[in-house]
Amino acid sequence: GFLLWYFRGEGYTVDNSPRIPLFSMFVIFWSAFFLKYWDRYASALACTWGTSDVARREEVRPQFHGKAVVSLVTGQREIHFGFSDRVPRYVVSCLTTAFMLSIAFGIMCLFLNLEGYVHRNSPIYIKAAGRHAEPGGLFYTNSSDEDGDNTMNLCGQIFGFIPVILHALIILLLNSLYRVVAETLTEFENHRTEHEHENSIIIKRFLFEAFDCYIALFYIAFYELDPIALRQELIGLYMVDSLRRVVCECVIPLTMQKFREYFRERKDKAKEAKYKKSDGDDGDGGNTDNGWGGDESTEVVDELLDEYEQFDDYLEMVIEYGYITLFASAFPLAPILSMICNLVELRSDMFKLVYVCRRPHVNRVRNIGIWRNIMRSVG
Figure 1 (cartoon, rainbow, N blue to C red):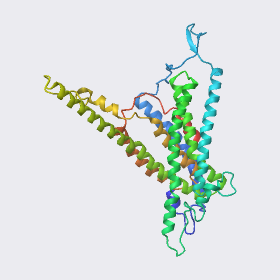
Figure 2 (cartoon, rainbow, N blue to C red; figure 1 turned 180 degrees about the horizontal axis):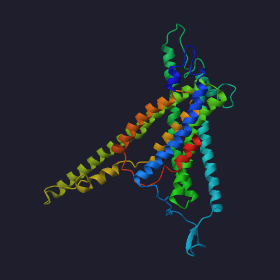
Figure 3 (tube, rainbow, N blue to C red; figure 1 turned 60 degrees about the vertical axis):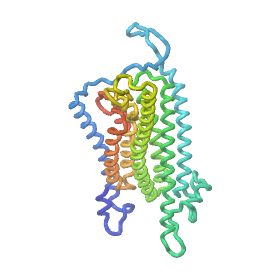
């Protein structure tokens, strides 16, 4: 993509370059070869780590409930909850998710109007919001004053970026809300094994968050047919998303952790002062266990750390993979920008695992599981 942009030729842009179709074909083949390469690499890692023969986890969940019946195979009593019993619960999950998606779609329509991507003839045009992106509006990015000064133009560019930031923040809040909803719905569906339960949560959350990330881009690309606006939206998403990762995954959790440590230390010092004042020297040299020393220090510190969740890290990579494979022709610089963002993400995740999160639980598996199927669907 960088070479296509750099050698685009005089008088050509990335929008009218004759090499764009070739680059799009290259991305299609690259996507297929990348998945094949990952399969081979995952198999090599499984052989190296001795996990190629590890069976899939099939533990029955303690929360699983149903009717007690006699198994025709083993002759023993076991809990049974058939697919017909689960269908009504699937319907409830689908309706609830559809309602949440309608909210996300409405918010997307609102902010696309504020960003000026929606024309008056569009079915999702909102007059009250769209007028702010028109000439003279607060978020009109091409404003300039009568004297030709670029001050107003710069202000317009700055104010025009506000809807992008607000949209990203509201999407983050919706995703956090749907995380709780997805866990509740999956628990309601009453899956038998941990494997089925985890896969159900992953599918729900991925579909919802992928809808949030891609729906605006699909609208701009296939309804407005505006590659320039699509490229601007992609650049905004890359910038805001990279900043969001660092702030939400490292800065905010570390700040909250420091606050918890500070208040815990104050509480322990107050207890120690109270014991010294009431009991004096009780024969142990005034040494009181404040929870930070001895063999329990590591456990106490771990209690203050957040639990590591691998879903967000997987999701970020899959969504970024979708940005490249689905919209490469509109933004050829997306691959190199993804490399830069991944370098930032690499350092951010290293910092998060060392200082912010607890030590992750170790599960011996053969591959990345259902995420492989999701990547195949995206590619």
